[in-house]
Image 1 (tube, rainbow, N blue to C red):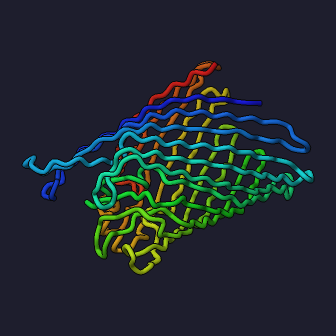
Image 2: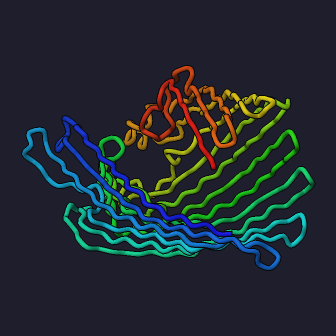
Image 3: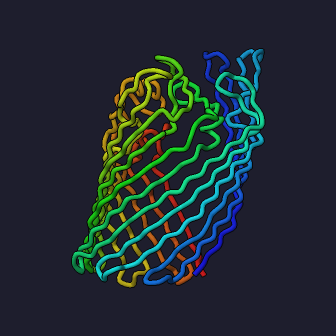
Length: 397
């Protein structure tokens, strides 16, 4: 089997700010990105197992513009949000082999080679000087090993070790943006890629009318790309690899069809994370909670399906606990995204329905946020929409 995808996307992002009474309070920026992509994937029988292999390639063509000025219009200066007239290429080549040495055991091994290259046009460096025509590239080979063991016909255990790699993007390298509560974030062409390794263990139970799965994970992060304050107490940051971090958590999900027409489903997730980074450039290393980690979150849904299976209706409740695992310094620096004393918890209800008119047409509708709850996803910087309606149609052939 094989598949091929050729894609082209054009994304434009503009912003205007009036930050009175700050100096140079008028700020504007525009970024235009054209992306050409190619994905090729193949699957073949190979020996006792199955081999999946392929490649993907994306080319970004980026133009940017921007300025800062005061209210009187007497201090105009160019301020590029990222490097103008830049290119960014990302190439991946991968393979994955799945085989069963014995009937109850399935082993999956994988490898991926990544090559990233950035060609930077005009941008301002950390000193405010304009720089032109720089380039850099990075490459890495990462692997994974996963296993699934069928304990009984209904119970199975799984686990794995996986590596990951992220090359610096244009924002990491040349970003010059307003960030958090009125500060600035400056990129650096000296940053190196981030590296991750994740360990996971889980248990799965499947029956005709019920299923359950739970897993725990731990991710170790080295050379994390992060903004470090330029001086003690400053809200202006420069991008460095000066941080290491870890994240661990647990996820649970389940489904129960307690009646031929009624099904109850739900999930819950929780994580904890810490980061070790300098308090400021060349300052002491401090360990602190990751400021935008996922709070305890969960969802519960009850669905009724007509005997004909042509119509269904579902009620869902989504909830999150208060997230206050943040230091006073991070709270002060990011008070526009994270409210005082943390992001409040919330409970949001919705009602949805679907109707299969015939085999080629499905209609759907829903009412979101039934109680018009005023809430925010932690770290997002904006409140979610109030009560609203959704109408959808899907045509297949």
